Image 1 (cartoon, one colour):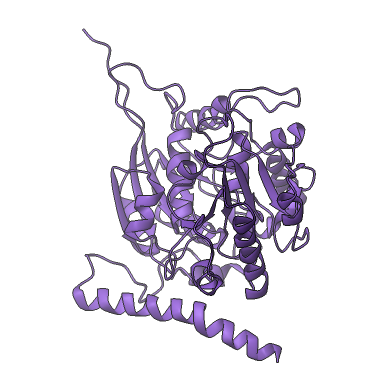
Image 2: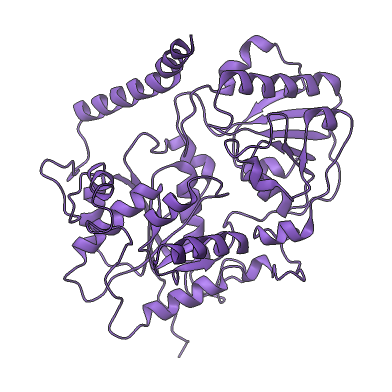
Length: 457
């Protein structure tokens, strides 16, 4: 008789933006017990877990174009409210649940899930983490994620910081599990392309003011004019009107219109990995794309033109060897990354190398998480109830507001009148929702900047 095929683990991913959906779905594949994405399944076995995706309805709910650009497929994918998702989790059975949400969303779901699972003898392993570089609101974001069975840290450096925060407030730090960014990979850089290609990886909210964004755009256009033999690409995350993880009030697409850029300057969208396939120099302020680029040994620059500041996030790259200005780049400077710093960020350049500092290999970066999840799934008597650090006792002035934003009461149960889509929205509801989103985006991109400028007069 042929050997039996192991049951494919069932994983649910709840995400609130396109980048978090990408992180959550790829993480789900990386941490699923059984054959990893790197080693592949046994011959004849089905590939990967059964993956059900849920998109939390809100300002940053991905559009079909954004989902297509992310390129991650799921066995099912639908938009839900928080209350509808909790109802689904009460009725369905999963092995793993990945919460790919902003910190407040994670905290609300932990309390809501604790409520709907309180009478169940078994529940999924709950996993959460961060999409990329953690350079702001470290304590706030971490404590909002506390209570998940695994809080993933994308590097050894982050794992140390995460444990220090939890232990510093007397919270259980055993959930912190070191992994790596799940979307690293691609072919290693092998030399210059024809034409030589410079890519600026833009960020929706860094920098956030018109003056600084216009300065960066002008320098990029100037670089294209100084080097007509090069292709200069502005890699954008979203089109005007779309939202990603962060709000973009001043889209580069609008700022570039009056600049009359040369023919070798272009705006590009699409999957970052595909853009990196043709990149000879990656330039950014503090995008996680820098880590993707470093992983592939592509020359990478983190700009210092606007200063090295916490508000910009480029302070995270102090010690990387990648800091430089546009003046230096125009003069031909190419920074060399510090190997020890790179290893501490969970980036193993080339994908398979090992370092004396303990960086290990990227292929083994998710082994500890998989082993831990397997043990939790086999735990006698099932898993204990979720136990977040924030409770009505420890944070009575903070927690209720976080839960209320997701229409949950202090005990995690739905508030009266909470939106819960029992069926697909009708035509009128769809029109109202689109109008509301349009009004919100207009307020973010047009009205808010005007109000701020008036306040500066």
